[in-house]
Length: 376
Ligand code: 9Z3
Image (cartoon, rainbow, N blue to C red; front, side, top):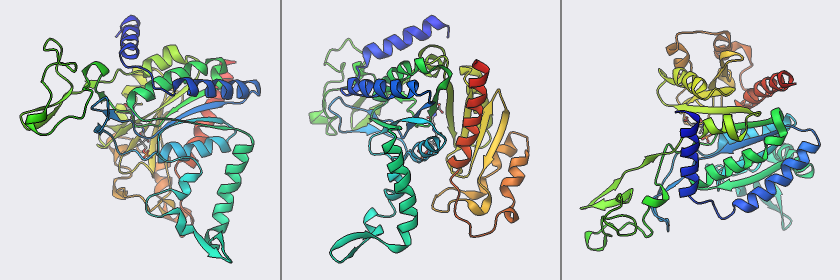
């Protein structure tokens, strides 16, 4: 696609899919936040996190969604803050948040961390140390005003927010970073093919199979019943990474993620994405090993695996450990980090679990430093 076709696709999308109601508020908050940190010479990262929904009706009862809980984004945001970044956390509403994520996972209620003592609520002894550590970081971050939390629900809300915040970040030049961890839908229902009301399951009540407004000349609604079946005929979401790289944020460092389930294609797909969009870094991950290993693909450093050593891997993740290393093997290469990552003897058993984001963020911050220096 040439530049003018891409621009036409952008203009078509944003003309036909109206902005979210809270866009103006988000822009105002982001402008103030970015301005303040730019003045202080700080790096600012936009972290996107969580899944995006694809509504099937305007008055939405049903939608298509994906698995993402927002762990990668929320965890990464904490490590970016630790590394001196100001963070704009653009997340799917109700997905995990930095800091509170430690107490909002679904296996355990936050109330399980509390007890009553003399008519007062106190934190259980065995959680004091960890909660104090998290609370201190959280309080410090709030005091310094380094975290801005914005939210979206649908794919269109996400794209509007991303575009507008990216444009606001332009004055930061190379000190801006985009860390696109949100799991973004590839397919959606355009506004002009969306029915207003709930799709009816019984034939007697279903709407006419004409256009969304009832006219027979238009394309049929993207989601509709035919006989007793529900037909969903989605359209591709335009790939806006190209615009982000070339137009919205030409000077910032851009990190995208590539999620696959098949180890044999992960590295190839990550490389393809890097070549296609010509940005700085693609982080490849597999659904079932994503908390234990990722692969960095960049022009700066080629292909590089990051792994949590075996005895430091979180066990509270329903991944498949035997798959660790498979995508690397499939790509036909072995590197040192692989052997190191799998060496059991290097770290004493029983050590606390290591979050892979604690290994990812310092690497990225180093790459960012190199890019900032190059730009100067
Ligand atoms: C990722 O690959 C993230 O690492 C995960 C994190 C979504 C796997 P969780 O939220 O999971 O911690 O449960 N995100 C990006 C996936 C994506 O949609 N990438 C797009 C693509 O592959 C566009 S950049 O085309």
